[in-house]
Amino acid sequence: MYIIIVGGGRVGYYLTKALLEEGHEILVIEKNQAYCDIINEELGSVCVRGDGCEVTTLTEVGTARANMLIAVTGDDGDNLVACQVAKHKFNVPRTVARIRNPRNEALFEKLGVDITISSTNVLLEKIADVVPTHPVTHLHEIRDKGLEIVEVRIPAGAASVGKAVKDISLPAGTILSLIIRKAQKPIPPTPNTTIQAEDQVVAVIDPKAEAEVRKALRGMN
Image (cartoon, rainbow, N blue to C red; front, side, top):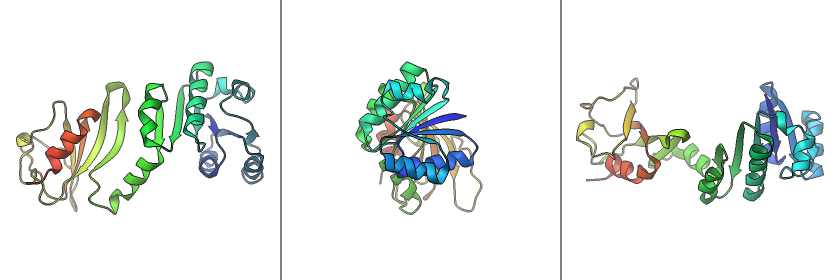
């Protein structure tokens, strides 16, 4: 797979290293010559100095044949522009953008970026394992259906504890697909399955109803 990475800073460097080790063809575009020199010296001649937002630069690196463009600069605006140019000018099938400000996520998605990665959200989800009170972990977005797969952790004292799934007032369209319990195999819940404290409930939800789902499953008595 031919992948273009816009941004050769710390994130771009390690991403390039990982993707090269997986056997992909990688080309990095970086404005800073010093960063380019480091990448080329340590990872091979895979970095060119230039502006990944400019059509001329993207043309020179063969963006028209790229399978994916990943923009990971430290500037949300640059990442958005690079993805838009790749998508609309060069018909790149998949674009991925790093977002430093989570408030920009909806805008990026509205403007056609295929995948957005918010450093803040990733950090929150990574600490979920050591901070049990973290309420909802976002696992996967089903964009074409307008749905999201999430994991909800059930705290002791939640109103849902001891209730059967059928007796919990969940928003319309919410599907509880899996319950993970300590020292047990994951189980697909039935209407009669009883929720227990410390359950990890995997659900398919409408993102707009996340607050309602969280209240229904985690709300206290």
